[in-house]
Length: 179
Image: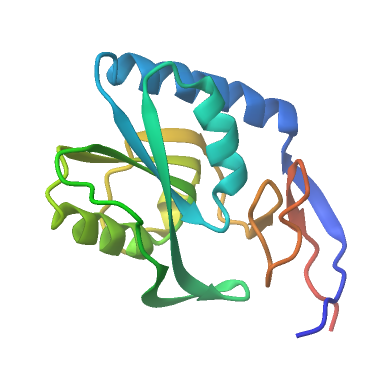
């Protein structure tokens, strides 16, 4: 699909707001995991910026790994979760923190937490930059939330539309297509 530039309708979250909640989350997670080792799993591709910022705020020993999971086509969730890249290491006995860019329907994270729980970790928790609880299709326990956002399709700060707009430093809402 060829890139078709869209117009930004409005900025929803500024880079300063992101920095503030990342610092808050880093402090809270560091307090909660004091004396423990943490194993962070970045859900690719959207979470890479959030993970990079968050890990610099942590004051506990930690390892990182990456999983690639997909359930979106364009602006729509397909409801089908596909693992494109699995973990590189065994997580048995480790305290797992899944780092997610956005929690929407909960289907992807529900699938992922169930899968990881079968691998005998010491614990599994979720941290997300953005949360849309009004879109939930399944109950999911999100332990750490950067900020709750309205039901709008967002891009920037790692979030994309068909692979584009990840590089925007702010989180924005794109203008609807004019038909």
